[in-house]
Amino acid sequence: MNNYKGTATVTFENGIIQKGSFENGTFNGQCTIIWPDGDTFTGNLVNNVRNGTGTFTGTDGRSYTGEWENDKKQGSGVYKFANGDIYVGEFKQNEYHGSGKYTWADGKYYEGEWNQGVKHGRGKTVGDEVEEGTYVNGEFVGAV
Image (cartoon, rainbow, N blue to C red; front, side, top):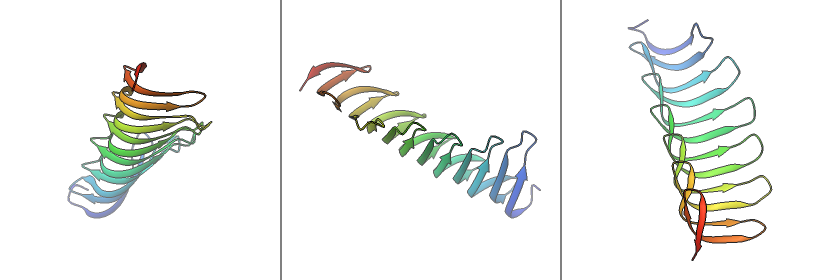
């Protein structure tokens, strides 16, 4: 199969199914991955790894649509949680990083800067009260 070029469907020993563009023994280009638990990914692969844009959908209701690099969420994307929470913004190595907005299912939200998955930098939380100012390692430390 190493010399095959075209479209292929492969079922691996671990139960993962991959379908899509296949060349020189690897999936490259538009592909779909289906895990044994029913989770799916549809998007771009480079040498069998998620790179470029794509959508992951979990059977539990969570999903991510956006940019991938080396099999991790990297760049801009939208992550929807099973409980109705949504994050729209930038990712780095699967974590919120850069600017983004996290909206809880009840409508409360934080919009601002993130660092390695936590609020860090300038931001604003809107809920029962409004906090706008500086956050350090997830803690609000001062108003504007």
